[in-house]
Image 1 (cartoon, chains in turn red, orange):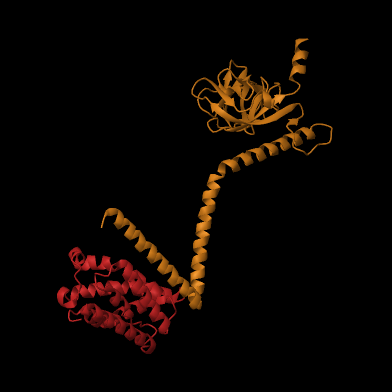
Image 2 (cartoon, rainbow over the protein chains, first blue to last red; image 1 turned 90 degrees about the vertical axis):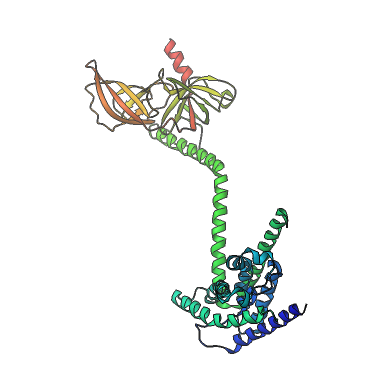
Length: 170
Length: 272
């Protein structure tokens, strides 16, 4: 029970952190930093797809509503991450992880596997986010550059986020 | 989870995901100016695609009805053409209304129900009979040629000897004012015929059009039948000419039954 409470508190704190990033961390038009995909990916495996969809939806809604963003933008990109969550986990960590309801962590699964899972989740998120944000008005090279830079910038923070959310002491 | 439960769960996931994405796109549409235009463009494109496909499907299922309308329209236009042709050669003012009677011929549109084409004595059955005005010895034509001659009539159907029957001959003319001979099926394919009894002194070229002569009481004059091909001198006195027919007998469905309204009078005159 304590672990669940700690996860919930940590999750809410990370949403607040994402709001701060959105509102105050404007590095460049090419850089979008988001920890929302890794937060969705690291939801406990006991949380099945439908609850995960609702969590992703309301997390995206909160971020869009409270941050300097177009309402719906984070939701439209985050819901597909929740849809593909189990597929990514099955692909990277194996079927047994899902069958045993084992939560993933850097310590248990290793940084490489976690990194691959994070990068896939981020890729799904940023492809949709950048595509919807540009709305066909920006050239392809700009979108590709933004995707690459955002993936790189978010990856470091996503690793820290994954560690905070999946650490066994939490 | 049972297999059935699993399917229901996956359907639920798909439905919730789609609803959430639609809601998100709805929010984007109403809150972002660029996204509004972008999504509107996308939605219009999608709607246009869907409407286009729906129209295509509807059109496909209404093809039969449309085909019947076109057949009717085609018949009426053909009647008008025949009427004008007739009016140009006669001395009375033309009535522009569509009538089934032109000159001494009456036309009745009909559909072929059965057509036997696997022997040397082929025949066909049409969906018009005595109640529709069809009489024995009426001709069956299309704008591209003659199809047959009615041999027996019931109340609603008629049995006709097809042109692709070795017993049938049609009086035909080379060009609109050339020599007259007899045209019969070549017995080989659905588009071949032989025009015979053309005197050897008559000049003609390969590719000349062959028309009905109008010398029989069955078919009106000047119905185009086909074009001339190779010729062969028979007994040193007349030509036998291969004719490629305009009408493909394997594809005919809609025809017109043509009957001579003065036939009895002509017969009586011949018997005197």
